[in-house]
Length: 339
Image (cartoon, rainbow, N blue to C red; front, side):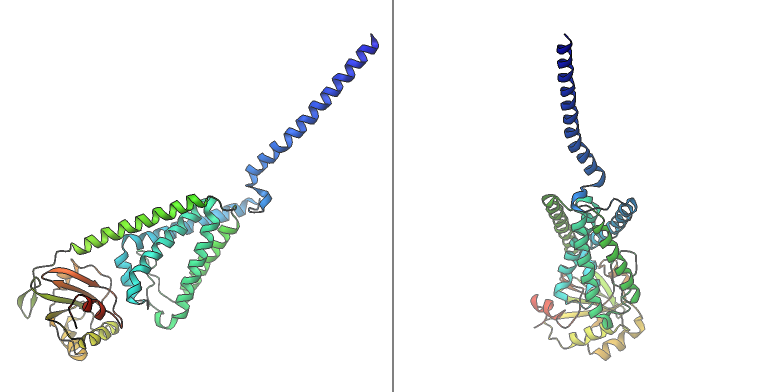
């Protein structure tokens, strides 16, 4: 009997030992899984376990996401307005509107990607490239652009100067920190869906703004030399200018050399109307003058002159917001207003 009890005890001990080993073997993968939830995939080295780094990276990502979504969203919501600002930054007129839309899409995409933790590294990379591209462009054209409003954020005036580069460098550092102290990016398919959604929004916004621009109701008359002058008969080119603006002066001089096809140029000084006659005389531009600037600006929205609108029997046929060596001659020639 003692021998049987001893054998039973040995068998029980062996069973307990095997059960203990099984528990240890089972506990290891469970502990590893729990650790991966805590340290967010530590084996790829994508995220340091120091809590303050997580916090700093997240704060940088959220702040940059807000700034870039607001900036890009404004560009997409008002592409024609932003295209006017781009035209003042030495960007060729034919690229102003496409650049406005592309910049808006890029900034919104960067903001969304850097906000979502699983996309953060991709957003950081794209945002860094975008910021470096901006700074390089302004650095190359610094002498021509210094002191001008870069038009980056609505209701915020940022002029090109040393502080512009300091602020953008801080943005760049924040983007790099947000990317380095984040987990490895994943979910390419979902990121592409986000990109497609932003593109759809940009296309819809452009269509709405274009339709609104084409549906503008031109005032029936303005006052020229004390008499009503019809804006709904024949071809008319409205030219908004500031007599003290060198850009406006250069634009008027170029237009004075054009051969107009049965088109009347109506000059509208936006500032210093007392210098309108001298401006037209000095530039050689043949135009009639109206001082109904408020009446016209309530209809035709723009940021700064020079700005032009081609009318055909009162209907807007073309809007010209960027004036350079090729514009407005190219557009006016395409619609038959000049030879």
